[in-house]
Length: 188
Image 1 (cartoon, rainbow, N blue to C red):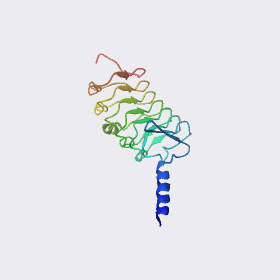
Image 2: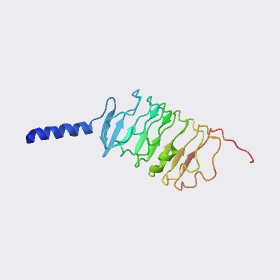
Image 3: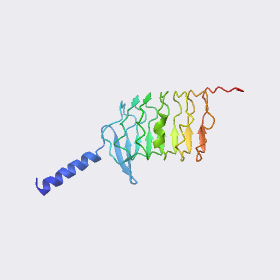
Image 4: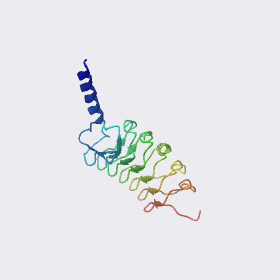
């Protein structure tokens, strides 16, 4: 292959790497890559997203399962929006690869069990929205590895109790929403 052929091959490969999967729209704005895949009737996280995506919107889809490996090729994501996406299951390890994640919105879904151990790898997380789900428990140590968490929204779930010390490690927390949970409050 001559120099021109090699150049064409390199250009084609670069195009494949930078391509945006159908039906998403990808925009490079202010040195950030935004992938808008919201309201597309998607049933899975699309494959072929650009590796440099920093904001990924998957809201208002039909993604019932977040599979382990779904985000393995987009590890630079800092904002992940999955509200109103009919998510029921988040497989263990699905979110753990997103170590740069600052904003995670899983609100208005159907999640009853969550792999809280995935949060150990998300130490940059500042916003966690899990309101309007079916969460029945929040383990005492679930949020311990989130020193920068500023806003936590877990209202409108099925939480009945919270262990003492659940929020102790959250020194940056300034916004906490817990309302509309069926808390069992007693003198005991």
